[in-house]
Length: 224
Length: 372
Ligand code: FES
Image (cartoon, rainbow over all chains, first blue to last red; front, side, top):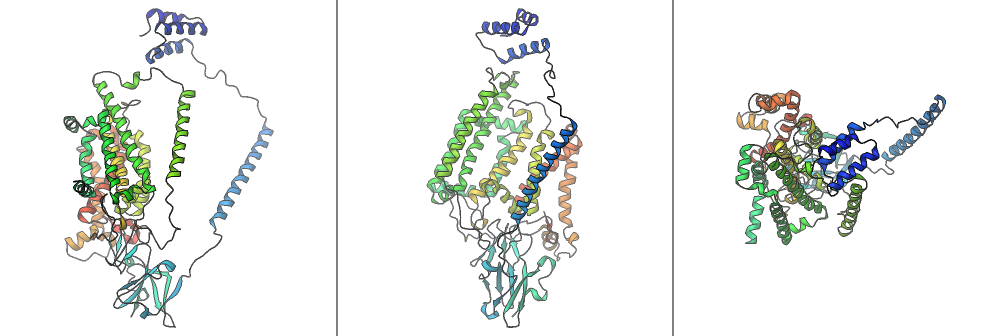
């Protein structure tokens, strides 16, 4: 039930807040204590008109600090802040340097050309050096095991004769050529040469990329 | 009988079919225009958002999981500790959508009758934040903690062997909440799917209140007041995100091949694909000549297509079909909406191009790491 005229009048004419609340209680009791939203809205509107709130009344600025002690506190605060941040960053930077560093040599010998069968993909150096050695009828190549899409390690599927990446399904032929899935370029090849003792030397510091037309450069494959 | 059902489900869940079906059904479930709305009501799809409808949804989802649990192949997937959140997500997503839609439909009907929305009268008994609300929140917090602890005791975290760069598990799946991203990566280059799209998703969601400035529907549930926005958002969220997560979880197996939920994950399943760039389609297959050696010339057709899609199409739309919207939104807001909308739409477009034409990249310049 909405406010009646008389109720409105009596609310507007209430003399003090105590008065106001007793009138409110009366209004509620007339409605069996139910105080629905619309009623509250009406009453609140009258209240706001009657007792405008001074928001800034109670706001006061405690005790005033003078300039000297302010500067002292400021210096102290800054020193503490700088100390904490400095310590934090020291620890972080220390964390970036590993305690033990294990890196296999970037160039290594993998054996004699006859150790590799034609038409086979050699998986022996996948784990230790991240290369596949592939020999076909005329050459031997060293393929990087990093998928050119986002860097997962593809698997060699002998039955389908392809490298297949488990992350988003890119596929590469044994030559490293990409043919399915999202990989935008073929696998990278590493420098591969014969060393003086007749063994094959793979050098991972030099890469050959197909899209730059480097696959027919002299050291990107080993003629057999 | 069960077998046929399973085979049908396997067949239907191939992405080409399931994605198309979901996309086609979507506007009828969340009708963005009057025409769809009429059909929606004629087919009684709006009954989904009643108590009975909610109950039926619940039964269907549960039925699927129960059926799936009986199947040895699906059971393996379902019982992975990692996948439990996804089952929860399916339920909670259905529940919250249902809840919001139910309230919206009630309010929409009231507004049609000229009444005020439910929320206007709702809290006849207003309660205080402190203590009433805070207490409820506190109790929820405790219950949730209990739930998490019990869960982590009952289902051990799926720890695997120590990381080994030479052995990537097959399939290699991201955490469940990133499977949508991983699915996007199948169709796009990492800088797009991994950097630009996620950024645009977040920026876009922050931008919603600035783009949609319709004051109606503020403070109460309502579908009608912003049905186009609702439709676009729900499509982006339910289909392009949640559904992709579901695909990534349940339908992606070894070598990232597609498998129906009841299919055996055969690592030797062979799918013959041969993906071709647009430039190869144009020069080699279309014109019968080798790819031009000049990169820009080679990719010119891709640039043209992308340019038309991103820059010409919005202008054309603003002049024709979306004229009213353009006037209401103004150039800035319209441009933003178009950028966000067109990038979102690029995902399904690219998926279809891949599925039907084996198209790999529209612009493919691996030399510059620039592929679209
Ligand atoms: S990382 Fe190999 S396909 Fe994405």
